[in-house]
Amino acid sequence: MNELRKLFYLLLIIPILFVSTNCSDDKTTDPVAINEAEVLATYLEANGNPVNTFGQMTTAAAVKTNLLASANQYIIDIRSAADYANGHIQGAVNVAATEVLKHYEVNGLSSKEVVVIACYSGQTAAWVTALLHTMGYTNVKDLLFGMSSWNAKTAGAWKGGISNAKAAQLVTAATAKAAAGELPTLSTGKTEPTEILRARVEAVFAEGFDAAKMTNAALFDTPANYYIVNYWTEADYSWGHVPGAIQYTPKVDLNLGSSLKTLPTNKPVAVYCYTGQTSAHVAAYLRVLGYDAKSVLYGVNAMAHDTMPGTKFDEATHVNDNELVTN
Image (cartoon, rainbow, N blue to C red; front, top):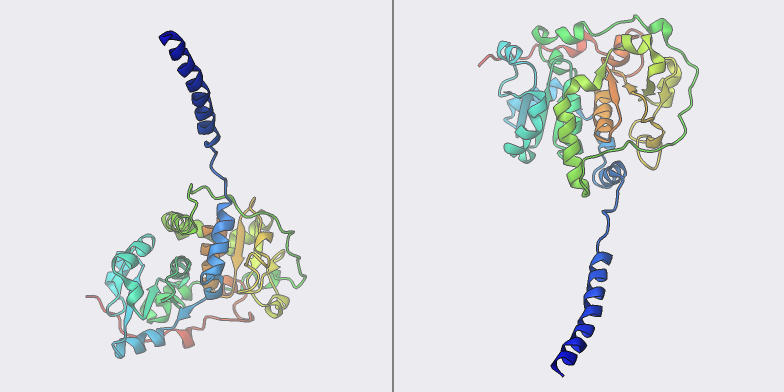
């Protein structure tokens, strides 16, 4: 009798164990794959949209006015330690370009009214500024024309940056945008947009501006190697542009709902503007999204300076005689 009772209970338990094991297996699911670039771009466009702040700069005059007024201004000089020591803006702090994000956050610089990034020409500073804006730190501005605008002794970069060597090679024939494709593939391993954002911005900071810049000589030597973006208005594009360049309207075309996806993911994207500063903003942002974007140094100021439209560097107008300190 006892043996029959044991057998009865055993027959009851076996189905329960079987069902329990199967239920456990049913609960095991693979992680859902996400398109990190799509998640990131969607998040950024919904939260301030850095595209709208490309080209946000300040001038030497505004920086000096703030100094005299003891305004809530913080200046970061990202030039070499040696050049900083030879002469810098009063109160400026010397920080390597790749370390600016860390310096900004550790020192709580979001509380400042304005944070000014200064470099030699304004182009590396623009790259830094764009990355900080992408992180949501919109109180940051790069110094127009960099330290070249502050004093004649620090103006070497722009004095040597202007040229008319490519003027005869510019064309007026328009080139159409490519067909829309897919965004780049990002592999941060993150799922939350804020985590993807930090991982990408930190990665772009780590690679440095050298990865995001190129000369116009390289562009004209091998134009077929690049998808060339003219970041100008249609009117200025019609004046003349690099052969094969495609016009993208500032603050409009580099959005998901517009023409962002027409940029290729299988070749470098060369972006140029008037001075190389706005294009450095653009290149930094596109690199965060995973594009191999490069800013053409000094823009058309280094191609057709004397006749170009838009912002033109003029030594007599833009180089000031502001104080340089060495302490």
